Length: 288
Image (cartoon, rainbow, N blue to C red; front, side):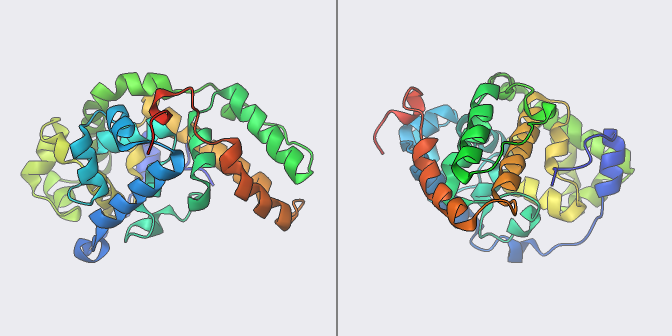
């Protein structure tokens, strides 16, 4: 299932998704930071990264990174975005078993195959084609035709270059969102549990370090609009959509009725070794 109706104008997408509701965030966010930290640590270990290397890739100090893993503080959205772009692992993997994980019913989550998801988020067209053919060969089925929109290149390098402008993009997205649905800043601020002054500051690209991954989840569950659309048109948006659609394409292959369940189970056990950490990448060279 795609992230949303991407063939529609952004204003129509927002209007269709916007379903405001009051939410008890205290219930949803119980033990949230600790669980996010545990998920971050789990992904890092599965990927074979050291804390030092991943902290450097996410542009934070090792001490600050340890604070994230220990659940001492929220992860800002730009740092979470760098995690996704660097490792290839989608942000929703950091929210597994939290109050917000019900938002991800349409997303593929396979905690035991973090390396498969990471590879799909990092690989180029050639690597993706190789993986599809390898999966089909292992599962003893004919390889399907790969849609052109899954072979449009990889935006990861460009998205990483553009991360310095990430919050400016989000700020513009928040303002466009408010104007599209014709709501007041007071109303929207109330929905996500902040004051209107803070919302207006977000739109002006001020205090954006406070716009954490948790705030993005509040926005999603309280408005019904996927916060990814706040970055619509950016290289980050294109990379996340490509990553998501590639994972669904692969998952549909593995869940096809033509596949033997026993082969799929065995494949998922060996896939981490096949597409595990790229030791040519400096991020994966250092010991855990």
